[in-house]
Amino acid sequence: MLKQLIIGSIVIIATVAIQAEMFALLTRKHEPFLTWTRTKFRRFSGTAFITVAMLVVLFTMTIEVWLWAFVLLATGAVTALEPAVYFALVCFTTLGFGDITLPTEWRLLSALIGANGFLMFGWSTAFMVELIRKSR
Image (cartoon, rainbow, N blue to C red; front, side, top):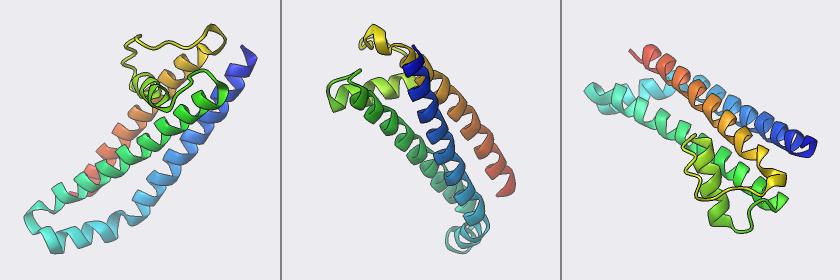
């Protein structure tokens, strides 16, 4: 159990760092990019800006899901790439279909992946709301 909690905590710290860095990058590039969209897209500048920002947020979460998938593979909790990515994505989005489960010695990771995803989606939502507010 302790091994799962340590590994899971390390991955959660890594995903928080990844998301923090990507959001810091978006925050730093927010004004120049918004200015560029206003000159290129005029009336649709807000839409273009938010669309690109959302794609960056989704890309960030994709990286986090893949990180979890590689951890699942490295620990032997899942033995192939596609099921590892699928399981990580299903847990990260908190869908939890249950068609793939982890062995008993690794099942705490599924709860940690879900908690991590829940927090990342909440943080992403708050971040996007703030970006939309700033882009007006």
